[in-house]
Length: 289
Ligand code: UTP
Picture (cartoon, rainbow, N blue to C red):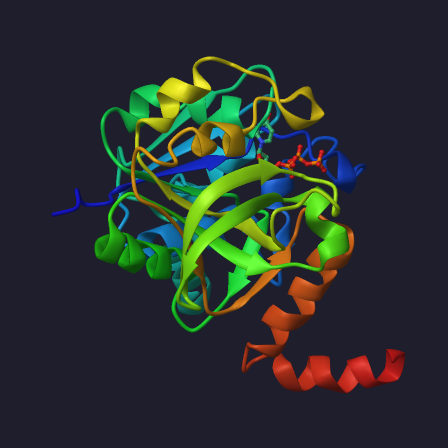
């Protein structure tokens, strides 16, 4: 029997330097794709996987992320007074159960591994999910739900993986693979951002994870890895051999919204998936290409 998955950690303390000046006074995770901020996509995806406890790892200048999930009393009262039913409906996804969302501060951006370690009191002794809000997945079944189902099958750690061009391995966490049935792949090793010549495969981790709490003990050693940062990948690598560890080739398309081109592609793909916008978008796209 696997322990139920009810907790998610959302690291949002990065500096977002690739999106300056947009991120000078605003969190990258508040950037909208069509009409919804990245952070809300992540929370909705977590909820769809059965998660009901959320921890955002934040930093300076990130208060809008917390505000976004608060009740906007005056706004809602005004909308109700004006009978703006549709607008009120649009606010629903940004409402979370009172007390179900906590924040911790990372204070110093020492890397993703350090950010996850900052959530250690929230994680306690439970399995937990991680969602990096700047990775957005368009899929039939929400990506984290696919991972949660795989976790029920295999137990232990499960990360979402996708094949990337070999020349891009130096941007991602890369798997050394064992047994592989085309969907689930046994993880035998993990390397953060290897040069294409040194990469053990071209299977890369995307920003969706189900991890066991033991990873925290490894991260606590604060060993610096690629880019002199405390890397989550290095902490996870220490679990291999002690617990089940699988990669799941998820169904869907991932958009790297931390990157300008990926962010723009996500706008188009998500707009085309919307019945209220698809026609207009298809029409004007023809003008430009
Ligand atoms: P990125 O590598 O995208 O870094 O982090 P970033 O700072 O957000 O963006 P750039 O590269 O400067 O443009 C991946 C995820 O890890 C979080 C980020 O918020 C993002 O969700 N992160 C990263 C932290 O929370 N703390 C860190 O120290 C580093």
